Length: 182
Image (cartoon, rainbow, N blue to C red):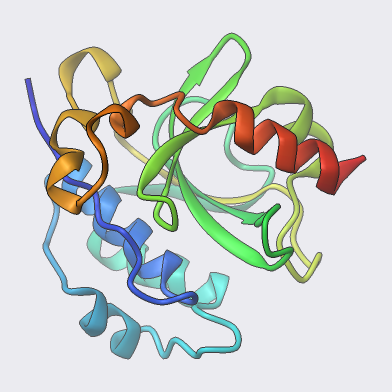
């Protein structure tokens, strides 16, 4: 069983860099520091990393199948550009696994997996600036939840033992999504 400690973003605008680092770990790709990625991708405290820069960088260094709007079919590993329901600004997350009720995604802000419900993905998946609908970078390798233990190593990040549960934030995220979307 593979064990990963997926990176928590260090700043409010480094979710894109943290997602690149997480995907790279999952696909056994190159390793970068968050600071190096922020510099290489011209990240700014206002906008973070632009979609085009993120997509171009991943295309050169990771097994990208495609990127753009409406290209991810819900299967396999992908970086999604969503509007963060907590801050109402753009945010990148890593889609890990489709379930019957939604998509299990790694959020580098919380350093945990969260469930993005199907109804939300269908109707509310939009970038923070609302320029992009259903934008993603799709990678050539799927994540198999039975072959890995992402959560088991999370206490090393300073999280409480019970917080490694992939559904730990499900109810909280649903409350925020309900309040934000409806």
